[in-house]
Structure formats: structure tokens, C-alpha cells
Length: 423
Image (cartoon, rainbow, N blue to C red; front, side):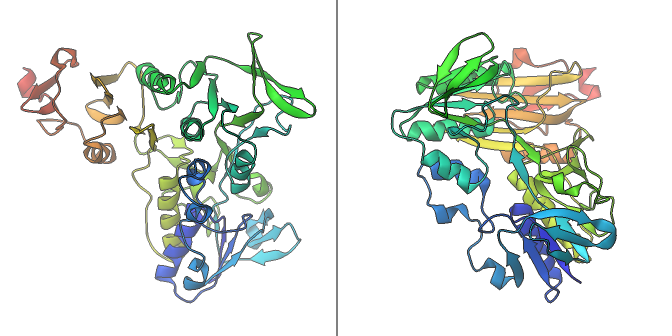
């Protein structure tokens, strides 16, 4: 059996390890555009902050490929794939055949659809070259514009502030991290950022990148105002790297749809990580769950099955965790304001906790400041069982008058009343 893996992120690395656990002799070729394998993009902001060294960006050491008998080929870009012929083509024109293939090519940063985004001084953050470009462009006290208030934008902002810069967050939506936080949670995070003298503007749209002497020097907003800064960093999310699959026979759109075994529409061709569209275990809708933990688990499932195993990818829902100025923020599942969703809120000085339920089942939560009980909550999200009796134990809950109909609180436990108790 000849295995080929495209991509050296967590999906590709974990897949190779899973293959090797079941098949100790067959060749594994791992192709990556990077100049090193197993580099973690989620750690780049920590490197920018000076919290870790460049070697610590690697989640596997330099001997990994040799130890696992992986033919690691650095600086190799796949430009086309012909699934019916079981072969792919590299930039150099070299063709490589395979028996089992994993597409784990990751994703690329999104960019504003306006002129000037390619000017010097406009950056993104996904690869080490991006982070190095940011480090080469900053100096203490400098103003920096962060376009996008998602989790990456928030992490980068906090780390740049720690380095003595003056970041400004510009977010198009009316709240930051709009897919993860409700309005109150967004306001709490904005207040935290402002307490650190970080300017945050929401509901603003950028219409132009300003230029001076051939470099970006700021942005113009839709309302006519301008913000000046020699460095502009786009944190707008990512798109799957699927461009080379055109004409391959592999189905793809916003990502590559896969079954629970991580197999594509072509037998023997698998996909994992940011390139995939997987079935959300809570909503039962196909989603692009572009997170590090999801990529690692998907890679393990794919690699196991490529080597003849029988593994299934389960418990697929978003989990995001960051720490902002020593305040932990953890979200999981789905924030929802739909009419059939009940929510329960705990808010005290220094903490905000909100839980979302549909038909008595926990479908998501937001924890800020106080994250105790998160493991138990994640178990409830995985099981998707109705909360009945007194089995939803949370920390002391002083807001009994705010409970939705049918809920109760006794002896330190929050619970959904059984039909008998309700009557």
C-alpha cells in the first residue's frame, strides 16, 4: 500500500501517525509547501508576543519523519489531481501515484475585496512568513489596525498590546466574534479590551486602503472617517485550499464533503482538517469546523481508515478557547437566539456564563472568566441527551427568578423538571 498525504498540519501529521500504528512497513509520502512539518499556526501570535521561540512553533520535533518512516518532502506544492488515475502533479511537473490519498491542505486567509490589500504594510497571519513580516514591521508605541474581531484578531490584539503597540480593532458586524458571542458577551470583552486602552469599533465597513509612497498608511471607512497606521493586519477568517481539485473528480464547494470515515466521494481518497465539510453532531448540518482539535481528530480517523481500520468521526461541534489579559474565554456548541432555544445566564462581577438549550438538550455555552464545569458541559454537548431529573450540576446559581419555565434549582443543582414534577 502506498499512502500520500497532502499537508503537514495537525490533520496530516496525526493521519500519518495513525497509519503507522496499523501499517508499519508501507511507504508514506507527506507533501507540504512549508519548509518544516508540524508547524502550528495557532501558536504564531504567541511567537509574535515573544512568549515562545521559533522552534516551539513545532508540535513534533525534527526527528518525527525519520522515527515514523515518513518520506517528508518540504516545499512541494500540488497543482492538480486526477483521482480516476490515482496520481497527482507537483509544481515541478513531477507526478506521484498513490493507493490511498489524504487531502489535508489546510486553508488560506481571507482578504478584503478592495484595492490596496496587496500593498506593503498589509498583512495576514497564517504562516511563519506572515508572522515574521509582522515582527519586522512593528516597533514599540506603533499604531496597528486589526481588521476583524474574531478570535484570531482578539488573540493578536492582546499579544501586540503586550509588546507595547497600540492596536485598534475594526469589526464589520455589530459585535465582536459574532458567530460565537451574544451581545452581552461581546460587550464584556469590548469593556475588557478598552480597560487595556485598546480601541474597538464595531459596525464599521472599510472601503479603501490608503496609500503613501507606495505603502499602506491607513484605511477609509464607509462613513468617511479614516484611521492611520503603518501596519494593517487582516483577520477575516480562512477559506479551504481546494483550488487544485478542479477537474479531479473529487466533489468540493465551500470545502470537501466527507462521510463519518473522512472519505470523499472517491473511494480511497480521504480529507481532513480545514479543507473538509463535516456533519455537525448538534445541528446535523454540514460545516467547516476549522479548528486545531477538529483537524487532529479528523486526521486520526482518516489515517486509521486509510490503513484498513474502522474509525468514525463523532462529537463534531465548534470549541474555541482563548485567554485575554488573563481572562479565560471558552465557547462550545452553538450560540442561538432562535425562538425554540431557551437560555440560562449567570453573571457576576468578573464572570459571564450562558447556556443554550433546545428541547431540554444543551446545544451550546459561553463562559467568560469562570470556566469551571466545562468538562461536564462538553460531555452534555457530546451526549445530546435531554436534561431531566437533577443531573445538570452547575456552580451556585443565585438567579432563580430568571429561570425559563420548567427549570428548577435545588441544593446546588440546576435541572429541568420532569413531567411529574411540573404537574
